Figure 1: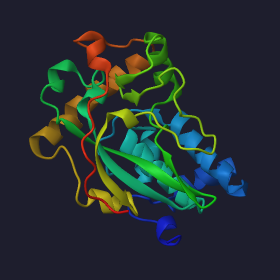
Figure 2: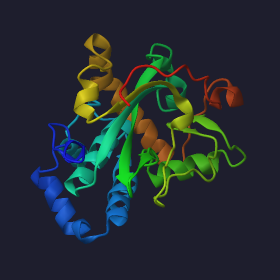
Figure 3: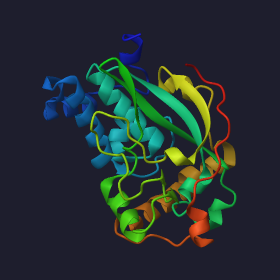
Length: 256
């Protein structure tokens, strides 16, 4: 199992020169296992900005070059870093309700966006136990802007966040699981050895809708995220009622 869960794949291309340079420059290989995990996790959470890439299924080296990503692409980069450090990890696939992205998705587009959005988190092995890592998705400036905009809220499902503890979310690496979009999950596809295995069967935004997303909509979304990062949080129609998490559906499919 360890060999499979530390293997390089086309998406987890940790032998790419840019990834090897990063690992060498930071000296992560010399750290104890828990600190290796924390160093890779903190890098992806704080130094790779929250934003929308051209596709979910991008090689880790491309995500690193972009310097930004969302749940799926930042997760691919984190997995590649972990495997490059000899740490076993696996992929857990879901969908989230599109309500979680309201405020980031422009309102003229929101009504025609797919109801269920592909989502994932990373599961990492530490001391014989599996931990779930999802709290790396929002960079600190985006999270702090949402905390400042909604100081009285504990639950928020919008603007890329899905949490019941907005002011103190479980996002810092402490050797335990972390979450920031968990309450938006509405379907569970189960666990996969790699993101390559998952995306072989699960893709989104093909055809004309995909062309519009890649060419126009994602740039619009990234400008809105940049505005949030600077403290300009867009208003959402419906007020507080639009900020609560949707009901979750039953678990389906996947591998244990």
